[in-house]
Length: 168
Image (tube, rainbow, N blue to C red; front, side, top):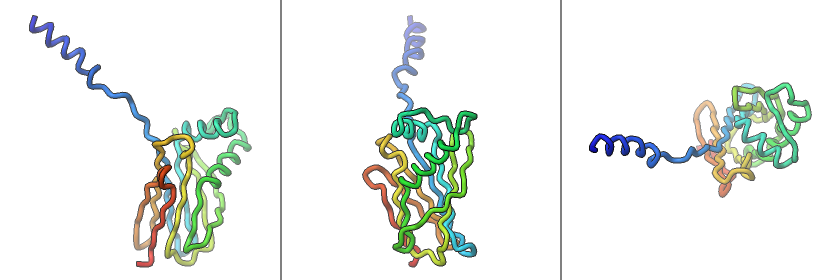
């Protein structure tokens, strides 16, 4: 009888303590100041399934990034979505993005963007609303690197904008 109780407890324990899988919704944008080139270099990483879901909801059609079914128009829509959702002010002035390209790394798309003509970096204000319309738990992490400092922001639906000062 004791064996039966122990076996029953061992069988039920995993079922009672198991929690449902919780998916993390996150994007990561790294911004690096390159003083010699006088640019800010951005790499934005977004999970493919999340961005495909967002664009499918927005445009009412299927997207197949990183596959033979991907079209040139799909890539352009992805770029425009990111340009609409990320806004940056450098030293108080709105930045103009130059799209460099994209690449895939398993289940992530990396978008490469440059902001030219940045002779000094005193402050950067970043608004990142990528996927905030889709997932209440979405977090957009921003890492900013200069020669002298590394700073980060975590932007969410309730607080999609942050300011970092580098003149201190």
